[in-house]
Length: 240
Image (tube, rainbow, N blue to C red; front, side, top):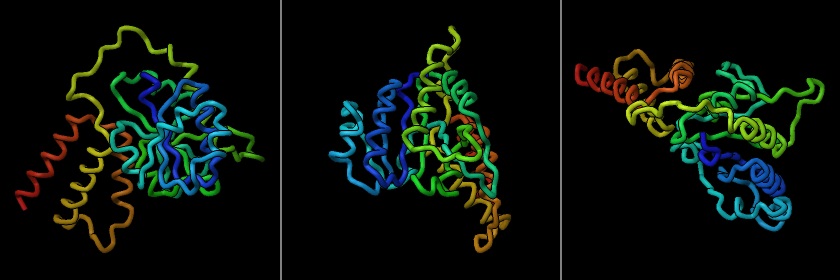
């Protein structure tokens, strides 16, 4: 996979120094695409000072109002989180993550999502991701600086960038992974059909949709599979 197709997404960052330090870490490891989601601080003098020359990354940064907008063009989204959740989510170690991403085709786009300094990502944001990853640390002192966490994951990918086996056949267009926007459209369609069929009570949905999201996100659906599933849902709607 081309490292230029992997975007670093920072959600709700509160300190400009962390944004600048993240840009520096990215530039060290040949990453260039930085996206900020609802930043809580300006990207000014402090950020540029901490970037230590990685100014182009800050100059070309994207800013989005929601995580959904930031990852809409990505076929694989991975959340960095140290906090365990009430609903367990598929997890990859940094090593497993690096091996998986480097083996993907060069046309795929991936987002590595990092949360707020003090509270990380919330459950709704985690459930928009295919996987979680957690960097192993001292259990007695597990808190990592935001830029340090970005540096670690970028290094794992950078160090394996030449590990992709030669001669891998590129997938046909219909077999390309579905991007986040397409997957979200499927989930909206699925929920609508489940409510129409009364399988899902819109007033008391419980955790059914969360568990279905986990199931389908873990499957890493292709565009062709999304089309098949939505075709099935449309046929069921017509029967109703």
